[in-house]
Amino acid sequence: MLVFEAKLEGTDEQYRSLDEAIRTARFVRNACLRYWMDNRNIGRYELSAYCAVLAADKNFPWVAKLNSMARQASAERAWSAIARFFENCKKSRPGKKGYPRFKKERTHGSVEYKTSGWKLSDDRRYITFSDGFNAGTFKLWGTRDLHFYSLKQFKRVRIVRRADGYYAQFCLDVERVEKREPTSKTIGLDVGLTHFYTDSNGETVENPRHLRKSEKALKRLNRRLSRTQKGSNNRKKARNRLSRKHLKVSRQRQDFAVKLARCVVQSNDLVAYEDLQVRNMVKNRRLAKSISDAAWTQFRQWVEYFGRVFGVVTVAVPPHYTSQNCSSCGKVVNKSLSTRTHVCPDCGHTQDRDWNAARNILELGLRTVGHTGTNASGDIDLCLGGEIPLDKSSRGKRKPKK
Image (cartoon, rainbow, N blue to C red; front, side, top):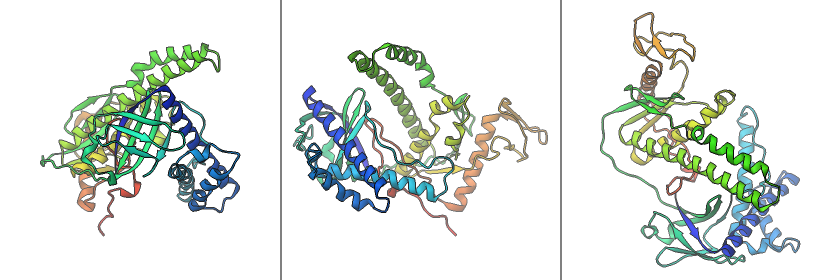
C-alpha cells in the first residue's frame, strides 16, 4: 500500500463540517470501546454491527450523518487497540500492556472513509465529500499526480487535522519497486548521540538535534500559553502556535531520516545496524530527550522500507558487545561510555569507539546474511508527501532456511 497526501483548501464553514465529522468518528470509536468494556466476550464483527445501532439511536442523531463505511472504520480502530492489547498480553511484554483508552478532544484528529462518501474530480485536483455533514468540494494541494492510478486502486481516504490545516491521505493498492545498479558495497552503522551514526568506513553524520535547537522558542511559546486564560480565544491561538512549532520539529526530523536512509540504501548492497531496544533506553532520565530527538527507530524503519523498495539487504544484528569487542582480534575490551577510543591491549589495535563498533556490526550482519539470506522489514508512519506501506500483513519477512 502507498499513501499520498495533499492539503485541503476550503472555506471556514467547510472546515467546521470536517471538524464535526472528526468528532463523530472519535465518538463512534469511543462508544465501541465502551461497548467492548461492558461485553468482554464480543469480537470485531459485533463492534461493526454496533455502529448501525448507534446510527439508529435517536439520542445520537449526529452519528447517522457520518458515512456508514466511516463508522465501520472507526470501529476497526477501536478493535485494533483491543487486539494490540491482547497481543501484548499474550507475548508477555514487559511493562504496561497498552490497555485501550478513550480518545480525547485535541488539536489533531482524523476520520477515514473507504470506497464511498467521497469522489475525485475528473482532473484529480478536487475532492468532494457527500455524507451528511455536507463538507462539499475541496481543492487538493500536493506534489503527487493522481492520474497515474485508476480509481479502483484508491482503497481509502483519510482526513487528518493538524495544527496547520487539513490534509487528505489517499491509500492506494500499489506495490512500489524501483531498480538500482549494484554497488558491491556493504556498510555497518553504529548510531549515537555525538554523531547521528558512524559507519564501518569511518565516515560520520552529524546529529541535527532538531528539538534542542528549537527548545528556546518552544519554552517561550509554552510560557505565553500558560499566561492565557483557559477557554479564551487567546489560549486557542497560543496553543496553535505551540502546536505548529512542534509540528515543524517533527517534520524536520522526518525529512532528515527519509533523505539519509534513502542515500544509505541506494549507495550499498547490504546495510547492517543494531537491533536497539529504544523503549528501554529512554528510561535513562539524563539521555531520554537526546535519544528521542535522534529518532533512531524512525531512521531504521525508513532504511528497512527503502531496502524493500530497492531490493537491498538490511540486517538488524544484536547490539551485545559490539562496542566492547575488538574489531581486529575479537577480544573483549571493557570500557565505560566516557571512553571514546578503543585500545586493545592484546593486539594493540587503536580506533575510535564508534568506528570499531560499526565494523563489528558489519561483520555480524555479513554472518547473519550468510545463514538466512533475508531482508529485514518494518513499518513506518506517514510522511508529508511520501508513500508508505500501511498493511502490516504485507511485511517482507522470510523464514530462515533450515
